[in-house]
Length: 238
Image (cartoon, rainbow, N blue to C red; front, side, top):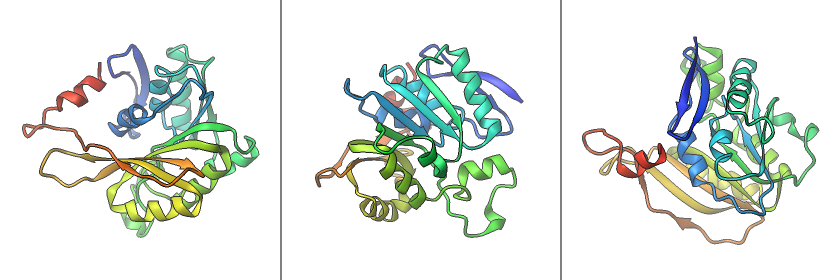
């Protein structure tokens, strides 16, 4: 069932479908992690879903923003979300496979690339969600980390920034892949459910051909002990 919801409390609307994954808290945290400068003119959001990240980024910059979504049903939701927010002049959504973007864009095109990708490897078909749309959103059956890094290297300008949110359990693998594709990690922020719990998610910023030098940001805690949102998280909704 198609529904219209608010994103944050910033006069943004988004179309979602009860049968698909709705946008997650990570899709709010990641664009807030992104640092956009006045010189940044071109931004690309991969695996954009119904476009929460492009919409939130549009509040931070006047840069041109592209979103890429493989699944037609989810792409249609993104298009409707862009239209209802009157963002057609700034945001363009493409119904395309990320792996085919070399045929769509020239190399060294984007100042910033963001992605909230599928988190899980396809190791056992029995564990893949039966809903095909949800399965593609969660599992690497259409896009692996290595394929993601390879296309990012091609599309990102020299010294351009790459931002991703992912599972902490795959951090070492991700660092190895980023190094292979000359995407130098610069900042990491670990996300925790609440104090006393281990991190299950993290956000990372990497720079194409950047200088070595990694900073670990202060941890991001989502909930208080009573499972209410922390004050800092509540502020993201204002």
